[in-house]
Image (cartoon, rainbow, N blue to C red; front, side, top):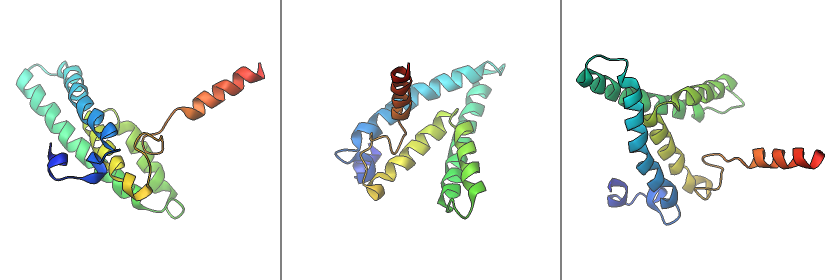
Length: 140
């Protein structure tokens, strides 16, 4: 509702809604499942909920900002920055809060790159796997 209220075109534009709405709808169940799985490490339910919530908010926000800053460096000038960003992304994808923040960050890049939200350039795709699979079948 906030995105629609402020009319953020990168997130709620005519073409971009198809990626923003599922991202927001899937965050709730993902966060609930994450919290439930981590709750078994605690004896007190309220302490578990508070700790997991604080961890998600802090870690998701910090990791999203760190990846954003590391991706700002030119990969030719700072190859280790790009490698660190990729490594932090893969580890951080275990937390739903990072996935939400990173997804919204990537969606905000759409107007700058003039891409469709589900083109595969923003969130990746499996076309190379399918092509490789077809090539393996053709070889046999």
